[in-house]
Length: 168
Image 1 (cartoon, rainbow, N blue to C red):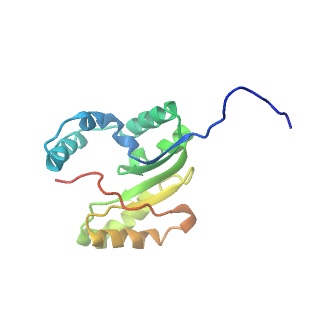
Image 2 (cartoon, rainbow, N blue to C red):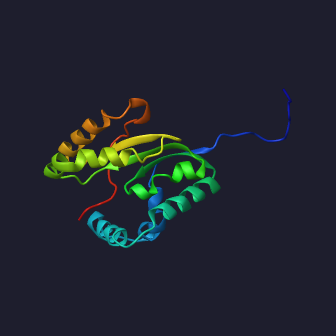
Image 3 (cartoon, rainbow, N blue to C red):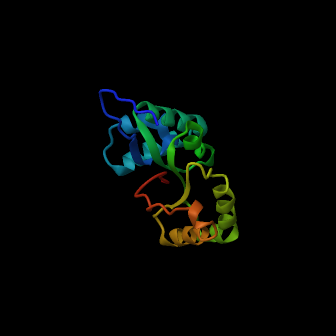
C-alpha cells in the first residue's frame, strides 16, 4: 500500500435525488414567470410537444451534473430514449422508468406488456427502477402489479412523484 498525503480533503460527490435529465433542453420553462400551476402546465406542455432529442438532452443534463460535482442521480425518465443517460455518463444512481398516463381500458388491453417491454430497455447499470405516477390510484396499482414481474434486485420502487409530465 502506498500512502499519499496532500493538503485538502477528499469529499464524496453530490447526490441529486430527483431529476429529469431529459428536460435539460426545456430550461426556459423553468425560467418563466407564471400566474399559477395551470399557466405553468400550459407552457410546459407546449414545449414538451415540440420535437426533442431526449437522449441528447439527457446527456447534456448528465454532463452539467458531473461538471457541478454530482456523481449519483435518481433520474425519473418519461421518454425511453433518455433512459441510458446515467450509464452513458458513468454516473451512479438509478434510472426510474415512469409509468403514467394509462387509462384502465388501455392498460388492460396492452399497457402491462408495453411497460414490461420498455422496462427491459432500462439499463441495470448503474441501477433500474419503476416510478408509478400518482394521479390515478388505479394506474398506480397497475404499475405495482407490473413491478412484481421484474426481479426485485433490478427494480426498486420509487416514491410516486408529485408532478412530472403534465397532461392538460
